Length: 171
Image (cartoon, rainbow, N blue to C red; front, side, top):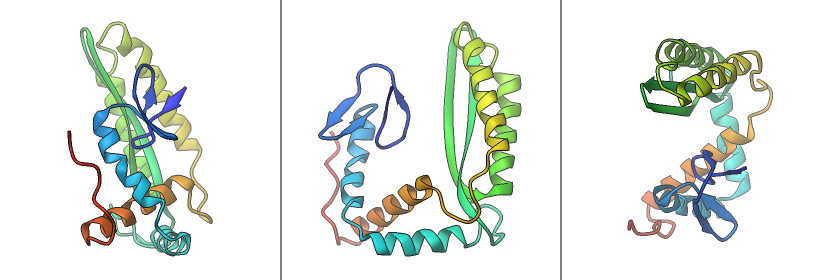
């Protein structure tokens, strides 16, 4: 199944294609212009910044150590309406586990109340969190997801500074 090149969401139906990139909606397509800009950032510069972030202070608790991307998954339901999401955060392992535990508890209490998707997605999202609690990223090497986030952040900084062309105009 295809995933959005910008937000990494699953694309079930439709989406927007742009060359070798695919986006879940027009909003992600607009934001996806940053992906093209990120490809122009020097690999050496990205590697230096990724290493600095990985071995730097956690943005959440300020503890110095292995910082990486930790994704928590949640679901919320009410009768016939169900929403589910996956939220990545750059943090230390401890803060990442706390986010997964909060999302698990929230889903346990708020996820089941929608028919039929609440009954389907609640165990899926809880299972993803429990799996994530047992599988932590390596403390020795940063993940590809951290590298992607850092690369996009660097491209956004360069764009704001006017060093790169602006993103696509909003439609």
